[in-house]
Length: 81
Image (cartoon, rainbow, N blue to C red; front, side, top):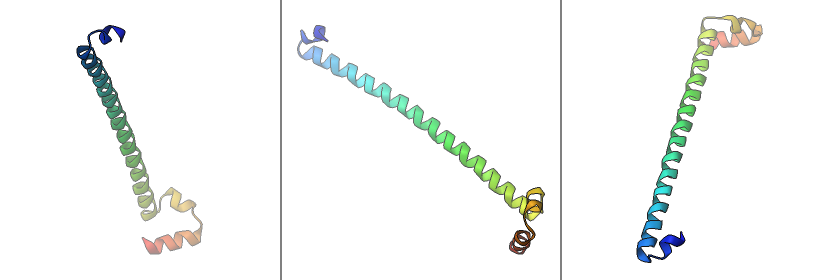
């Protein structure tokens, strides 16, 4: 840094350019991090959606988990579906 101070305005501009480049690299890295985060959220929402659909189909077609429910719950679900 002292090396660039000797050159006055040129040194300052060079230092600012390096700082801008570093900030740009940080922004790109954080952008990739955000893309990974949104991708993970999308996968998680997809898995939850699959489980909800599977549960609805299990109740509708009186599958294994439906049969494990108490009779009172089964009768109220049968009326609903």
